[in-house]
Length: 286
Image (cartoon, rainbow, N blue to C red; front, top):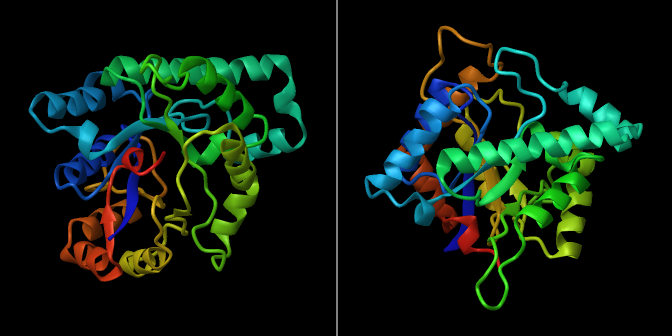
């Protein structure tokens, strides 16, 4: 069986997303969940729900990686630090090299890590970025600096904090074009090379990129599984329902399509047909 990881993004963004991801964790359909640690529901609802499962004997640490979804673009109904296009443009023109901006990004990351650790009670197993901001020019070097200082690698005596793995978005198949190729070129490939050069653990191949517009989500998943390799990461965005109120979520309907697939027999049958087993990426990486 080929061991891969399946990670649900956006945990804590809203109640439907959190409930859907918790449901899939309970069913062991996922092997990772990426969390908004500064979402309004994080401290009082989302993080306690994870802790409750740990205390009830559901060993999430052995079953699934729980990580930080570093956020610079989601305001949860309020103002965010900037838009996706704005961060890309600012990185390309070199504005993110300004000392004041660099300090802001690093401080934001530290605060989100603080909130994650206070909520879950331990360090994150991994770090990625909402809308992949962690890989953008002007952000990725700050991320690596913060991780190196905050989570030094465990030494031969077993002392020191365990260093989280970091997501890269290099396509699992070179044949994939469109959005997957663009994402890789928007810093994904550069970050992957830096992670390799510096010795950071990371996934081996990335999948799950599409337009959030497919009723036949299972067909997408079948294509991703054809590129399965040990340590590959497939991201997903499930929710168990569409909320009637709250901040707008442009992909809310598609989240329900994804959740329906992961709770169906079609999902387990697709894994079996492809000879794939879902595991924690932390168990698969050196």
